[in-house]
Length: 301
Image (spheres, rainbow, N blue to C red):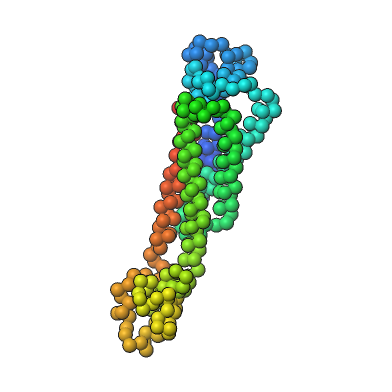
């Protein structure tokens, strides 16, 4: 049953990837009679081919950038593009699309197929590498493509597509900041937790945990376990079951501190870092779908 569920999720991710590809690749510069009737302009106003379709003129580029707003803002009309500029723009666009597929695809795969628990011990290096390479490519190509399409900053606010682009940039920056926080702050903490409860020895600011029978006690706030050391005799990160048998007190002295039960060598209760990872994972998934929504509105609204 689990295997079937995994296969279903993999197919779902592949389907979503194709949907994303369709949203991004579909040609948004269709030549239709409707545009000509609305603008009361001949096809050659927006297309180099007088019959319509194909390469756009500067006015056509501005019309596309404005979200099909006629007349397009003068600030968005630039000089005609040379053949070399069109090739360069196409290559940049391809790199932008590939990076988008890689990044969004990784987010969907990790969240829908592997589930966030996959990263509870720290983010895998492969996924992190793909994400940051994609982020860099998206950022660089996005800036260049934006400058090529919107010849003046005012054009971003004068058109529907420009405003949607600003929203998309905001969502992109949110995901970038989230990725930096998770990779540089949260992931190292998760890796420390994964090393086992013995690593929580109270040294260098680490929690001070001790094990008694099948329970773990967090003694980090105890003055008697400062820096994880108990009167120079015991160090946190140890199994105190046998030591307590010869101690002047029993386990009742520990019962006022946070307690974790153990099962198969692992904690039943998720740490706050793991819970934060889950929360951020699903927020990021929502933001990723938000970007797809913006792209869909940009293309089809």
